Image 1 (cartoon, rainbow, N blue to C red):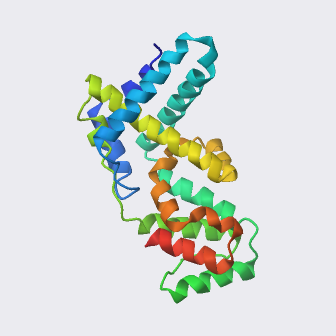
Image 2 (cartoon, rainbow, N blue to C red):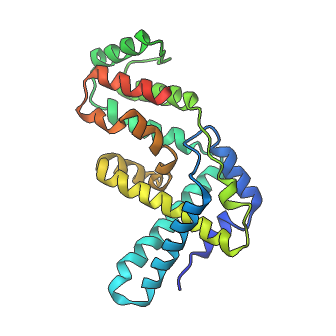
Length: 230
């Protein structure tokens, strides 16, 4: 059976890594659901690897190998102190404001000020405002994610391996949902090797109705930003 030993090595064998990952996403995302669910997802993912023995399911096996490696690469960025949550937010707002005029951006800014949300933007260009809004939303997130409970505490055990793959499966499921909901945003994250980290902010995006932005008025976009922050 194929098992990506690099993923296990990075997420299971090193408690310091687990703590770094936990610290990196503290105040980000929603606490991962109970470990029983995670173990179930991990067991399912490991069973999928049985398909490696059959040619007809080779595509499934190859897809999981790719997901494992991309998840590992994103984790490495976290270890290197990259704020992947901010990067994902920046990419989202880059897409949202890409074609907005200065007048539209000013309207969004005033709508936010009306509900006491102040964005410290130096300029009102689309790119400049995207950076400012991403910074404000990132600093406003007040959520937690205890990943060390899923990685470090069971390191070296069979349950630990299954829990690791449960986390990877959560990430893969989230990335696949994103691909359906917003192919453009998925592609933008994929280019940055961040699509497997989308699960960290998916609850925030769902709460805010983030993917309604492409069809929304400027006032609606201001409401989406407000819901992200609050």
